[in-house]
Image 1 (tube, rainbow, N blue to C red):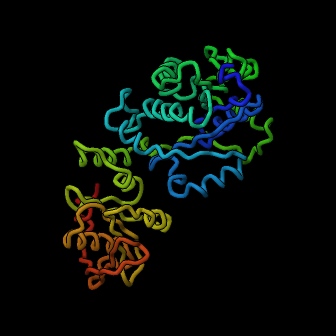
Image 2 (tube, helix red, strand yellow):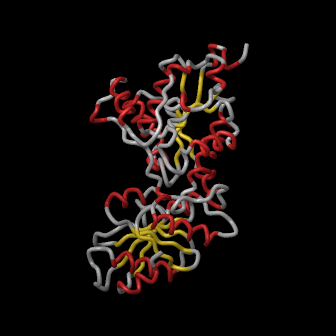
Amino acid sequence: MNAMTDTNERRCLALYSGGLDSILAIRILQGQGVEVIPLYFCTPFFGFDALRDPEAFKHDHRARHGLDIRIVDYTEDLISILKAPRHGFGRHMNPCIDCKIGMLKRARSLLETMHATFVITGEVVGQRPMSQRRSIMRAIERQSGLEGILLRPLCARKLPETLPERLGVVERNALWDISGRGRKKQIERALDYGMDEDTIPTPAGGCLLTDEQISRKVRGTFDRCSPGLPGKADLLMDIMGRKYLLDDSTVLVVARDDGENQVISTFTDPGNVFLKMVDVSGPLCVIRGKVSDENLRTAAGVCLRYGKARGVPGHAAEYGADPADMTESIEAPVLTEEYCRTLQD
């Protein structure tokens, strides 16, 4: 018997974003008796909460949507893509098409170990101008190595029949024929599935690489690491806070609020050094690169600039590898706003 028609192998993997479309795609297949394993891809630029606390993230989605998701750290894959994406970038440093192809390749690599036979997504023909044109969707299927086994349940009847449909694993007539950018049909179907109108998930997205300022920071990080590639710890320095270049290879990030203080405190990668003022309230800072006395003094001065004692001499900053146990200290010089701006990335 073909594995795809074996009742023990009626299992697929889903690219799960947390948005309404991917949830609906999963519900459609579950309604046909197919077991669906949702894969949630995360990087510093999207899915960051899952990267920070995977167990809490999985618990939240199990409680809200009844889904047992598998988290896939996609950072290293994306770093390689960002070096030279085959299909280029969007408006900023967002390689949307290559990113989707890469995710599908990872999903394909997991099919055998997860005893699944095909992959589904929540894509809709014509919904997104860059990655969901019919011709691009066909290219994505082909280049991901999933030709014939990539099913898009929300718009399947607008597309050629896939192998799961031909073999009767999935009933084509029970799949949908949505297209375009409207959301009315999805919302109507969500209500049919018993979702609360006030809590229907919004369309997923929010990749930070579509942000102009963050893209500029990321491009600078790649340039500084060339001809090599940056690591995850380097890219985390680009996603929040005020960023300063203390020298050609040393970065300082200064939190802008208490929320960023909390997130930055988790950037405990080897080589990172945290810094904050000793006796006055102010931001948490993190240095990555060359932790020289000169760089520490400059970092302390920048930290003072954004604290409650701005412009007041005689204050010190404490620093160390553990943000909860900083045992060294250094005097913080008073720096002008103009000088700080010359360092800002």
